[in-house]
Length: 111
Image 1 (cartoon, one colour):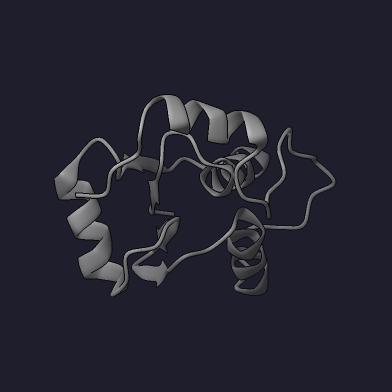
Image 2 (cartoon, rainbow, N blue to C red; image 1 turned 45 degrees about the horizontal axis):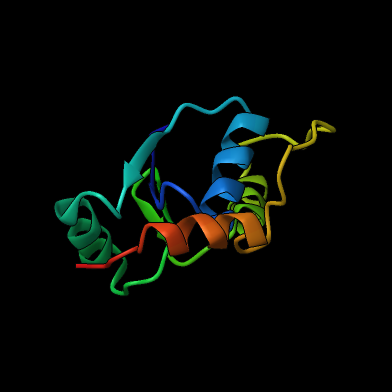
């Protein structure tokens, strides 16, 4: 299965997507949209909007989604099977207070 995930390096939502990929042992392309303008532009062009995370699974773009939403899509379309495995981070939450502090130390800029 070909998966491209347009993610921020530090973000609760992005980390939730990564956690779902790890939970299901899925290989995916982790595409940095913060430090690479071309990646961000590609995400906006493909998704039709500027919000992240966006995850493209076999050519289907899931725009502005949480890890939980990605997992629900994959389960509903029988791309993965239900598992009792857990994740180390929340899959449906924004940034933690610690993550916000890190971002304030280094401003995040969308081009």
